[in-house]
Image (cartoon, rainbow, N blue to C red; front, side, top):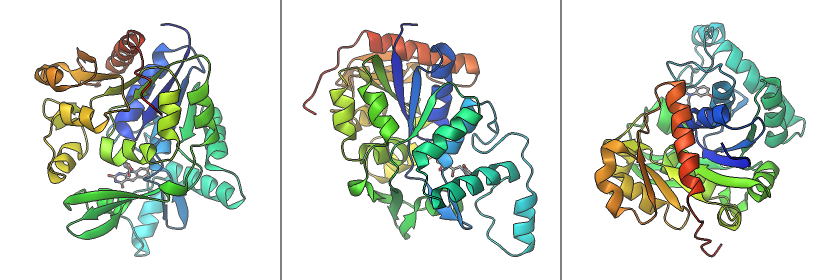
Length: 319
Ligand code: FO1
């Protein structure tokens, strides 16, 4: 694999899987993962950063393989006690996971930034990559639905994505700035590629894109930006991407995802099962197997995506 650094833009589970593949094939300390924080919320008096934690747990081989979030071999004593006291149990916090939220909340209260806390957790977890919150300012995704405007986790977890989505709002985004590590990673002299992971474009990647200055950083970097399709064979591997696209009145096709990213990407990675859409996509396309069931799959997709990126010239669209 060529020398140089890589930035991945990621949400939760799907993005963390590709990030793990990238981590496995790049030299140590060459990967930065810019993570969505629009899902973050206050719950039971704690600050929860689900996508950051999914990335921490996945890249340190601690993640629960069944759920894709939370830690493997968790215990649930805290949740049992919550239930016993008649407390809220719809958002499941395992005992080990809980300690991360408690410590993050304490440090935020003491004035540390989310970036600094995340960098420290990343180091303590022994991860040879940078995990970078998209911003240190609070950005909160809220979902306009047929049941009213809902906070992200209320929509996603409590209501299991059942309400029909009419639109998304990223409260606080207009006043947010890209995190300090994000600016540094995207401005690095040795940066060779930016990968938009196969996370939900509307729920997970759009909050990142809503942070002012992010587009200029991406387009001004002078390196190719490649998005990996979150759709395989007409549906999402996991999560509500296909359902949301239908509710927003969009065709459930990778071509519609590529159109959504128009002006932001120089290349698109399409699953072999969707090769018929290649002609509808306005940027160069790599057709390959994008399913990531095993670690070998993740590394293979990461390698193919980076090799594809190396063949592309960035369009240097006006930043
Ligand atoms: N997802 C669920 O579907 N149910 C849960 O109870 C749940 C708890 C949870 C706790 C900590 C954490 O970091 C993530 C958790 N998630 C849970 C996942 C998470 O809410 C979503 O997957 C992301 O926000 C979407 O990327």
